[in-house]
Image (cartoon, rainbow, N blue to C red; front, side):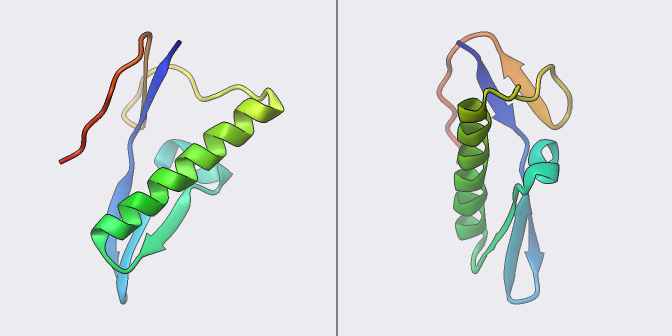
Length: 81
């Protein structure tokens, strides 16, 4: 089992916030929200949907480590505060 830690960016935008995942942006990992928390929750959901879709299609997930993604060889629990 591998754990993927994806970098996300949440920035203020006109009337709210926009969020994206650099490693998955080319696959549509972009969203928005009225608040910073809402934008973060939305990008979390989008990332999960993209990863689930890639797995269902048998497509490879991004690999290796960089500033945008870190692949860990074991399961972990991430807590963002």
